[in-house]
Every structure is written in structure tokens, then in C-alpha cells.
Length: 325
Ligand code: ADP
Ligand code: MG
Image (tube, rainbow, N blue to C red):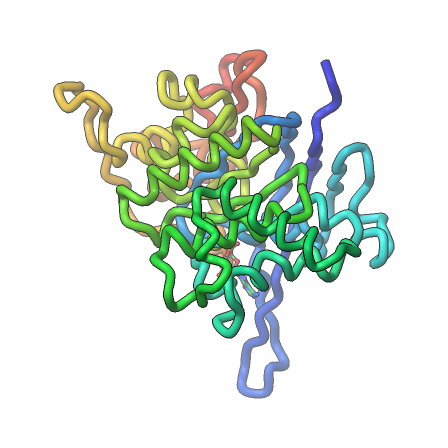
């Protein structure tokens, strides 16, 4: 077996929010709590969880835009947290991110050509001609005609803008792309087109994806593996097929029951979760999911479950599986 491209160990991050009239007090928000996973080259790991569970914080830590309070990140055998600023800048060419709202990430004053050429200008020395060829090739790759070189972001639809953002992210031939809710702002029909484009680009370029979403149904077909997050923790992780066929965590089961079933005649029951997502400011004791869990037991209220393997391929953090130890 080849080494995973990305190895994340025990990643934790706490934000401090100032409180009080003069900002003298502070409150801890534990946004990431001992997150560990591996990702093989050429594969997609889907990260799913409700808003506020720490997905974007994880993305920002992986790119070292935020410094985790604890843990390690190995990318292609390199310890990212140990790199100096120059080496990290070099490394970032191989790691790119595409965000939910392309209009917020694309400079409105620039035209398509400059939006895509910008990373080439800062990182690679090339003639104007070569650059033009590169931009043209990237536009074709993302399914846009060469006219888009001359368009400003306000002249683009959401789907077209996301294609430009993708072309820009691919300009320096990265190995790894983080997709942070890349289709959440798009119409459903456009979402499918972008997912298909991402799948094709992955095959052609052998890209590795971390695909972040709050919507499990979006990542079913693109993910090899799926990790479910709840309040800063991974609560379940396994292959994509297994998540949909045999979800183990009650939270995963609830998420799944709220996505449309592929077969409308299926007897999948909709599980309504009680309460709202608790705040990372004040996480509940024991299992942080217990206040909303339909299968809550006494020990869940006090004892924190560990994330452990229930089979060679499946990890879950839930006291329902304690007996398997
Ligand atoms: P997600 O992307 O899953 O919606 P985030 O990673 O954005 O979640 O946020 C995780 C938690 O951290 C939330 O409780 C959020 O309010 C908090 N948070 C995010 N960014 C900051 C920040 N810069 N300062 C303080 N708290 C933050
Ligand atoms: Mg987010």
C-alpha cells in the first residue's frame, strides 16, 4: 500500500472569544477536537456535518491559514506544521481550496483571463504567450469557451463563476484540492454539473479531494470515504457505500433520513432530531450528541465515547457499540 497523501492526527483548535464590557474575559470555543484521518492520493474524503461543526476550521488548519492548538498534519510525507513560511508558501501551490461563494472569492474588477492567470504570475515565470495558452487550456478543461477570458465576475452565472474559481485553483497543477461547500450556493441542476466536472477533473488529473458539505446526498457519488462531524469531532468514518448501507451512529442515521431516498417507495423513516446543534461554547458532557440522540442511554450523559473501529473499515464513536470491544 502506498502512503496516504494526507495524514491528520489529533487536530484540535480552540478559538477564544472576548467577553465582558472591556473584553477582559474570554470564552473558549472548541471548534476541532482530536480530529484524525488519512486520505489516499487520487481519492475523495467527504466531510459532512451541520453548520458550525468545524468543517471550515478544519480546511483552514490543513492549509495552515489557522494554527491548530494541538495535533499534526503530514502532507506527502512532510510535517506541515514544522515548515517555515517560505516552504509553506511553496507547499500551498500543491494544496488549493474552492469556496462556497465564487463571487466572494473572485476579484470583481478582474476579467476571466487575469483571474486564472494571477496564480501563474506570482508563482511561475512564463511569457505572455505561454500564459495565454495555459489559461485557454484551463478554460477548456472546466468546460468554458475562450470568450470567458474577457468576462468580469458580474457577467457570470453561479455555475460559470464556480468553473472560473476551479480553473484558477488548478492553474498551478495542485495535487490536493479542498472543496468547501462548492455547490451549496448553486441551483440543484447546476450542482450536478459541477459535481460531474469535479469527478472528470479528478480522473484526468488524479486529484485528491477533501469535499466538505452539510448535505450528505451531495457527496454520495463523489466520495470514496465519508467522515461525519459533530461539534468538532469525527463521530463516524467509513466507505461511502457503507455510510449509506449501514450507518452506525444515530447522528449519521438522522442525517441520512433527512436526505431524499433514491427509491421513493423505500421505507426509510425520517428521524427528527430533537433540539438544535448545541454550541461549541458549551458542549454537553458525556457524548456531545446525547441531548438530541433518539437512542440515548444513561452512560451517554456522563461518559465520552471513544472513536473506535467496529470493523477493519468502519470507525464510530457511540456507546451503542461498547459491547463490541
Ligand atoms: P462549519 O464550517 O462546519 O460551519 P466553522 O469551522 O466555520 O464550522 O465553525 C466552527 C465553530 O467555530 C462555530 O461554533 C463557529 O461559531 C466558531 N468559529 C468559527 N470561526 C471563528 C472565529 N474566527 N472566531 C471565533 N469563533 C469562530
Ligand atoms: Mg463552513
